[in-house]
Image (cartoon, rainbow, N blue to C red):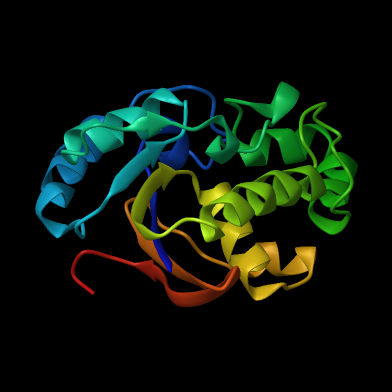
Length: 190
């Protein structure tokens, strides 16, 4: 059986501005909060982190060592929208943002569609389901949401109905290759 805890990275300036993430570092509050996470993490056999600096920085501050950098759990490629606030992108091209949120195959930003993100995360979860032991992965809100959608075998539209706060835990268990959702968006205090 595989026990997988997904942790969304700590806060950044982009998170606070409701912007599409680029490769920004943690902000000061995020660094402090990530250090406090160290004592709250469950025991693990293996730790993963997204290639993004904010995920690797969160993993290091939380005391995860060693950490395997895993490209499959990188945030969605937002293309031309990376680093820009959603409100700004929407004001500039409301039809593009509406299409992106309504059509899982749309990628008006020139990056990855929701369908592509879900397929990438599903493939990684399939690999993880074949493993035993406990794993922690420090990743992004979009990846955690995609993992929940895949674990539940829910439609792509369910992606927009999952909330994932910075430094929250989402836990999945794989039994005979099938995932069970144990908890979503749990915080250290929960």
